[in-house]
Image (tube, rainbow, N blue to C red; front, top):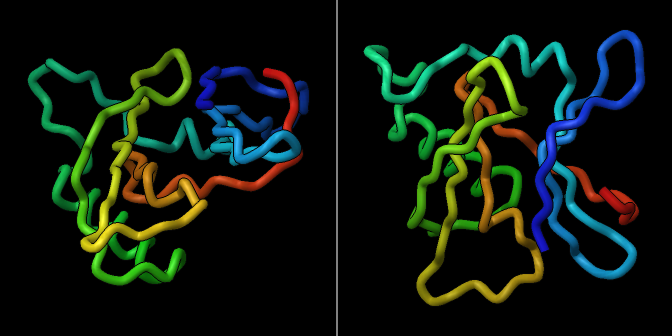
Amino acid sequence: MLSSCALATAAEDDSEVFLFSMGLDEQSELVWAMKQSRLQAIPVWKPGGNQEAPLSPNKAVTVADEYVQNTLGVQGATAFTIHLMQLGLTDNHWAYDIGFTTNPPLYSDDPRLEHVHVAMDGKVIVPEKRPRRPH
């Protein structure tokens, strides 16, 4: 199950912005979140305007591919989906959601291969495994 929201926690300094989560089991979930300062540092982009995206889809796939190989340890995976998603509810901060596949199929319980998020700053939004909580 995938849930999405853009709520900041109550911390005063550099609050965490919850982007979305994916349940792993009844006790845990993967959470994609980032500090407010990082979100604000991502280049602003308005899709459909006269500007090109700050990060090309090709560069985003290259960054995601390096993450899949070097962090997840999966060799030979290829990108098969690329989607845009807005980060938070305001200010036009965006990321690419890139899905990978392997041939033959990789049988894994790790959903990080299905959703590699590369923000327009060219950095992967790395999910954290956390105890499951209601959103």
